[in-house]
Image 1 (cartoon, rainbow, N blue to C red):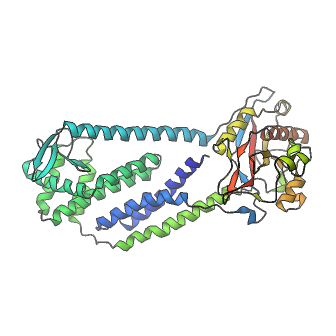
Image 2: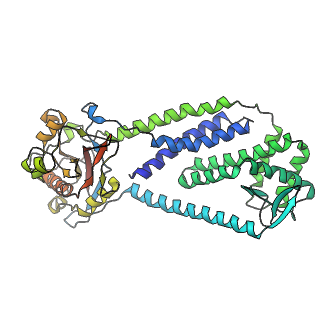
Image 3: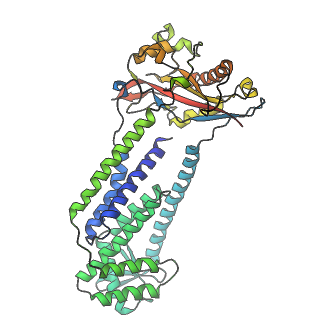
Amino acid sequence: MSDFIRYIIELNFVLSALFLTYSLAFRKDRNFLVRRYALLLIPVISVIIPLLPSSFDFNTLPSSILSFTLDEITISGKAGGTLASSSVNPVFVFSVIYYTVLILGLIKLLVHLLWIKSAVKKSEKIILNGQMVLSNRIIHASSFFKFIFIDLFNNRKDSVKHILEHELVHRDEKHSADRILTEIVVILCWFNPLAYLFKRAVIENHEYIADASVIRKGANRITYQISLLNQYIESASITNQFSSQIKKRIKMLNVTYKMGSRWKIAILLPTAVLAFFMIACANQNENAPDDMSQAENTVQSDNELPGENNLPGSEAQTKSDPLSDDLFYIVEEMPKFQGGSPDEFRKFIAENVKYPQEAAKNGVTGKIFVRFIVTKTGKVVIPDSENLAELEGKPLDEVVVVSYRPLKEADPVPEEKYIELLKAEALRVVSSSPDWEPGRQRGKVVNVIFTFPISFVLQ
């Protein structure tokens, strides 16, 4: 999973948690200004929390943590020896769809802004009650930053005054800035239904603020409500939300809810802290899986591993790329494959792994786990068990460099020679990996160990 997609998922998690908290806390609160501050804080906090450092130096953690596990890749083949290699990655599919909709959303926003710019040029400029307004028959009464649009032809004269006062509040309070921020949130979180509810809440609260301000300035409550009805009835269409928004605005003008206090904003804090710890724990669990921890389902490789000349302790390794004892499981800046995300490494594996023909003929499937080290210089090294045990400070019988597990627990374990074929192919491709960009901990390049699962599946 790419870092950006992971970030977006975490952002949506925080946004959802904070918005649900807001909905419960402010459902019957008439302090619309406080509600506005709370709504503005939600996207700000949601953007920041996933960026907070939640990684740890796992070198100091218990040895039960094995390594950072990359997303699994599946290599498919056909029984009987006809081979086909594929990698079906739901995360990749989601990424393509996500970026496509994201780009379309940004284009839509840009087009809408250009449309507003064009409407400003085409509208007739009129001075009304000392204010410059733009008269346009096709634009519903609205405002965008300093521009106020009013259809002077389709609104009654007794309603225009109230409409102008209402839109002046939107302009002076700079509600358009909130709307731009909200649109960006929806574009980033387009797959999250709560993002659209968040947008609706922001829009409705703006209307409540403007309505309340007009009433405080002395407008008759009944007359103002009639003006609202006339405005929407005369411009009624299937798109103007008459059946929902106007009812809520009139209801809010007539109900007697308590004026909430500013301290309510603090309710968002514990939710934000809880969301941060949940994200941190999820990342830690993902980076410390138990896929290789069950010894009864693993088989240690005793064969000579590919790339032995690059193993720790060999003469070639000592001269070119020495490994010291600073072996890390996760660091502040994880290694990058050819400057990209680990997904690029998965693509490299998918393009190069071939299902062993003899294993396919005999119906052998399974999941192979390969542990490898990205060194300080970016080289990919597959250590032998003895060297890895020394680096990790573990007993030799607890260390597994390459292991096998059936795809399902109920599947029988095939003959060892077929397991070795799968292992050898996995090791061959991983050991042929081009150099990575090394990982960094506190600004220094370090050795980082990974676990990479490869599933061999017959169609």
